[in-house]
Amino acid sequence: MGTTKAELETFVEHCISEHVPLAISREIITDMSKQLPSLESDVHKTIADVILGRIQPRLVSFEEQVRALREDLATRYAREEHWTRAAEVLAGIDLDSGVRTLSNAFKLRKCVEIAELYAEGGDLVQADLFISRARLLRASGEADASLDYQYNSCWATVLDRKGRFMDASDRYYALAGYDPSRESQTAQKHSLVDVLTLAVACAVIAPTGPQRLRMLQTLYKDERCAQLSVFAFLEKVYLERLLRVEEVLAFERFLKPHHLAVDGDSLSALQRAVVEHNLVSMSNVYNNIGFDELGELLGVSDIQAEKMVAKMISEDRLSGRIDQVDRFVYFDSDAPTIEEEWDKQVVEVSLTLNGIVETLTAKQNETSSDNV
Image 1 (spheres, rainbow, N blue to C red):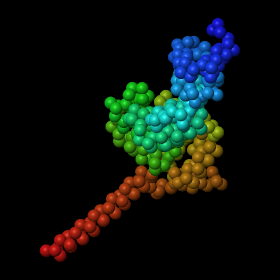
Image 2 (image 1 turned 60 degrees about the vertical axis):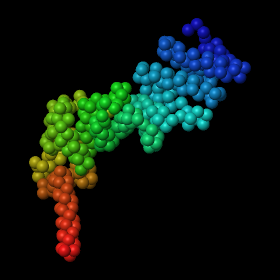
Image 3 (image 1 turned 180 degrees about the vertical axis):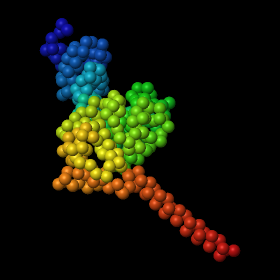
Image 4 (image 1 turned 90 degrees about the vertical axis):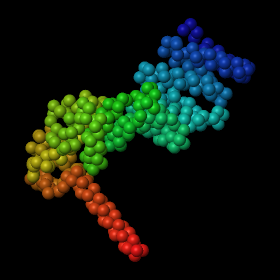
């Protein structure tokens, strides 16, 4: 670029000064903005930064031009996978300007786009902030089916990245219920196979418990999931069968990097889920077992095994007791499984409803007899 940055700043400052009619200033900035995406990346960024910097004092007079500049610049950064920088540039658009009235649908779309970029960049605090703002805007009811899909897709991704795997699984599964004919190709970032696979993955690595079991049951009984490459693994998890190392390794290729990131206990979300799952499976086979042997079978240290057993028992996710002297865990084999407990509750509710129906029927028959 032959023109120096200082010369460019001087030119831009003159163009937007009060000495130049506003209509002409806007036209010049608009024409310059349209040319920027076709320039080399560094040149584009330099000119855009200069314009945005110099135009700031008169921002209210150039809101439309600034919005276009920021959208193009954010696209450039995103294309180069500078996700956080792209999000910051796009977040610079004033969505609450009192000068121009922006529709809630436009604000919602921008909040979702910004949240997606922050999530890709790993800034989950900002991603959560913008998706929460999008949730409020969505309540206005102005979102079309395509935008609604994009919002839910982004929300699922944020929940997933934050480690809220049970909620993420539920959101991914909800995406599988959208009608493909109503969503644009650009909005559908995930195919049906993708969202169902992600729903399974997040359900598998979620903490054990009734909610997880219900989600696994839903996925297992969904005919569409039977066609997935992860179905065999899903089946073993749902039926509480022991998971072997080679099966876990094969399942890993369907997960995202953050699912495999190691935490403070030197375990990834997948490893923790597999250990917890196998603990529940082993409690159905063993009456008791020492922590040395348990750790060896689970592929973790005896200390880690003891901590996880204690945590699961305290959270009522595993029935048993710990003998800290002999360093044994005694499983309560007489305790019902989570699935049995759930089935029992369903039966109790059904019996209660039947009783109510029978009572109402009897009263109705008495009334009919009296009338006769």
